[in-house]
Image (cartoon, rainbow, N blue to C red; front, side, top):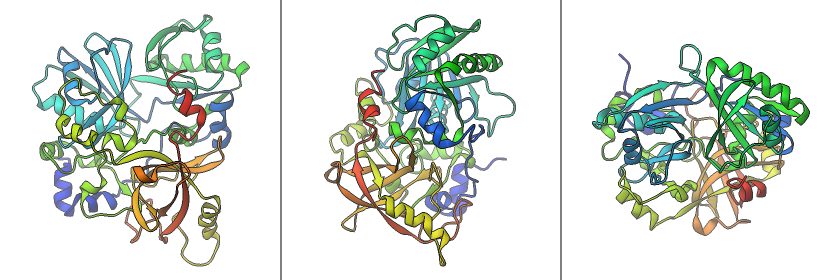
Length: 450
């Protein structure tokens, strides 16, 4: 019988020890890592047009039934007052204390039919409440290609970049109708009906195309053929995994499921394999010290107190006390180079900085200091070719969030944990400068308007 998360924590002794020494191997997107090289592939979504394959690394939870929308409204902090078929939204959930569970993209496919797509944290939480809360709903779950046997239910392709609109018009043979951000439309590509979501993952114009897996190869071939005249670039998993650094989306904050009201039953329902792994220089014996509110990572715009939902009263209190905000930290060039150079010098090196993405746990949590005192935490870190900078996304105390503020990121673990992704290393301090999130001015100014 599969061990539950509750049983795993009881066996190890604490949630923090379980996560920091998790034996899960590093996650590798089951997609070609590089079709050319990740630097050129990163450049493509700002200069020409990129084709990214999203079919394999995300989980789909298809939710249907007369209570489907009520379930989503009860769990999600978003407003559903004007949510309609052919709309989508970034679905966000919190626990009873108002701390973040996670986020995913919610597609309104048809009457009483939805698809919740993304990392499993918020998907697991939603399914649990649907199964245990007396809702008249049906779930069909299609895990990612790491855990699934067989092909995905859907193909999912992302077209992104300045030439994306022209490519869509060429491949469909018609002008693309004006479609609002996060609204859907249907197109004919090579005789196949294709649904499309209008958005852009790194701030550039974009379309997310999806449909039955059996039709995906034909759609992809048509896009590649039509894309030749627009300098279409196939993007592999390495570059794709770094796109969030430009749009400033934090992909996997630690979910607040390890303590609090109503979570004990959930931990007994959830398999231990869904726990994830915790990495970074921030350490505390209290798991609650790792929790975030939606406001800490820029989700305040999505919170709507126009309905009752799990954690509403607590979240209203957090809304009145927003102590941190999301920023980009630009790491000092010399300090990054020195850390990489330590691999070539005698003695214990710094923690390896992988490129283009340096995260070495599902939940990356590093200390951020100002004048030697903790002022926040750093999340995802990596290199942006389009800006020629190494950055991390961070949640910083308001008084230190002004662009230009000098801070320090503590990189590496002390003591070293037993995760497979952790080699013997020494902890170092890296100078950094606070900048806006998103860092790219184009992404900041155009992400929701194109």
